Amino acid sequence: MSSSPIERAGIKSALFAPAERGDATADSHRRWFKRILPRSLYGRSLLILILPLVLAQLIATWIFYHRHWETVARRLSAGVAGDIAMIVESLPYAESEEERQQLFNRATRTTELYYGFQPGEKLPKGMRHSDNGPVEDELAVALAERVNRPFLIDADFDPRDFVISIEVPGGVLQVAAPRERLFTSTTYIFVLWMAGSSLVLLAVASLFMRNQVKSLRRLAAAAEAFGKGRDVANFKLAGASEVRQVGAAFLRMRERIQRQITQRTEMLAGVSHDLRTPLTRMRLAVELMDEDASAAELKADIAVMQRMVQGYLDFARGEGTEEPRETDLALLIEELVAAARRDGANIYAALPEDCVLILRPDAMRRCLDNLIGNARRYGRHIWVAAVPGPDGVEILVDDDGPGIPRSQRENVFRPFFRLDAARNPQTGGVGLGLTVARDLARGHGGDLSLEDSPQGGLRVRLHLPR
Image (tube, rainbow, N blue to C red; front, side, top):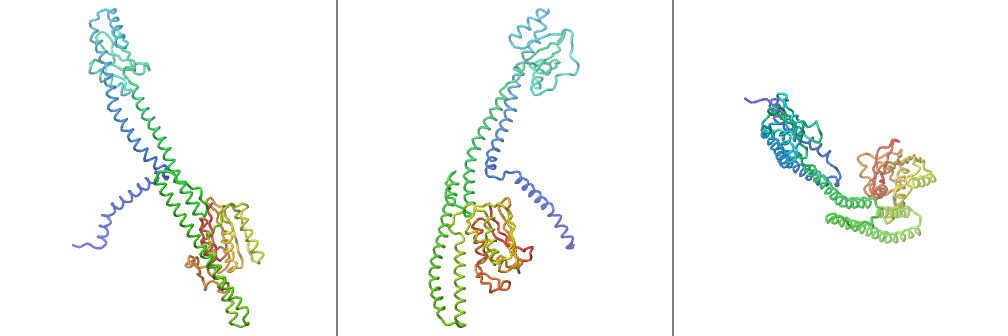
């Protein structure tokens, strides 16, 4: 009889639900395990060293306590019980109190146990010894085997001795056994030796691991500085062979990138020179022509070509050879805002009093000038703000223009891309302003993104790291 689809779905859910719950539990355990693990390489390396060391110490301690220590304690207790048994067996032969005392004195000199006798006394029924620890347990077992009489062990009467009371014919024999005869200090010595040697090994391993991790941190700092466009000329190879190999690969990568930048800049400088010369001749020739419609069109084409060549050179020189230095970003933005106001722009600025970053000032000036220039072309009002944060500075440039559709916000960063439907084609741009700005921002280790502005137009967010 076939089952319905609903029943089959229920059977399938019942079959696979436990497995899914098991997978979820395993995932939660893995996530918990990852949370408790150290995140740094130094911490994980120390954990790799410490865990086997701790396990080895625990195993060694367990073996010591269950084999060596128990064996030693058992033999010491057997020796004390044997001495006491000898005295118990000799007591019937000491008929007078004087003979009994002489027996006790000879036994004390020989066994280092102190004896006393209480005639006529008896031990309480059902009592054997006070339960104070493994030493008393071993002693009780030895007394039961060797003496085979009712006894009581008191370890609290005197901190230096164990007081053992044994019921014998005619009274109670009391024996004071020094703890040195039942306990060996090698236990503490062994534990302290293991702990001390482990701490010494851990300190040495920590020192070596710190030096290795320090090399990796220097390499990471050098890569971070190079990504922000800063000089890392003082970087030296250090650490283990693998770390040195990574450092050497970083240096080769830096040389290749710098060589590529230099070659591109030099090539485009030559192209600029080669193109500007015929453009200048063409412009002079057009100036000598009669003023008519064709001459005006040629002049406009030549002007567009010159702007395109200049814009492409600005894009190609985005990285540049300018050295980074400490720059007051707020002062730099104030200068650009003041220049825009002199040109008649309605621009408002909200800047911190002091905002010093390591920048290439000329490149950053060109980047911000492009952003403010774009806002001036497409909006009537401009708002510029700089917001310092823990990891860098956010520069916001807002306008009240038409904005850019979300689907086209990444395309506008492509070289020579224009949104003719959204922008006025008579503005004179060649589609490189935002491309150059993002290139310069990323050359400083930051980034450029586009958002909707609260003013109704476009917001450009420039992030610069510290």
